[in-house]
Image (cartoon, rainbow, N blue to C red; front, side, top):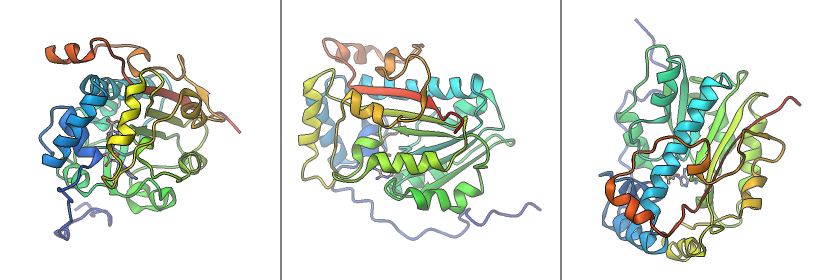
Length: 284
Ligand SMILES: C[S@@+](CC[C@H](N)C(=O)[O-])C[C@H]1O[C@@H](n2cnc3c(N)ncnc32)[C@H](O)[C@@H]1O
């Protein structure tokens, strides 16, 4: 009989405080994507965001479509088979491992998020091709060393082989004053050459109104920090951008995106306030 890895939970988990009375990024995003894992406080916050960013629904879908195209590129063209996805969000199929494993069934993915709801869903929907592997880790992005030392990560990924670190719409959530650049650097230092960094980041470069999201979250317990193109590019210092470099997600190697009829109307007259990029770690 196969041995159960020590990091797999076989015992019931202790109850978690889901803090449903205040908005949480993952659930707000789930609402924007049309999901069902959200509460009144999340929906109220999402409606506020829609006032500031009328393209928020289309933006969420374009963001996700970009991450999928990036993953396909990394598996097909760069030969990457391992992913560390931090700020993973409530799973909405297809998830990263489904995209990667559809191209290479041996692909392995570690999902990390600090939201217990995300983790509950991640574990419930835990699935993988028989040849590959996935794991879910509850961890805060501000503790990259803990993520890198976790049994979930070491039970799933081989850090001697290239890893794609995917940070989709995560970095703007990190607390004010926290060294987000240092966090990304710590992660990159732990992976070998040929590894990749995939980032999407909220910006007000395309539309000043997106800056209102920073105000909208004040006093909610979560803060939001938009970044300019130059600030977003700094996360990729020392790496080699995959063409076309940092772009709006819909312009990064465009492909078909499933946008429902109503969403196009939402997109009218506005832009998607996100920078998106993929870069590779060169030889030292
Ligand atoms: C908008 S969702 C993005 C989901 C997915 N990465 C994507 O791009 O489609 C942002 C996620 O980041 C998570 N998050 C926010 N702050 C975090 C932190 N400090 N550490 C880990 N995860 C965090 C939230 O719980 C949420 O699931």
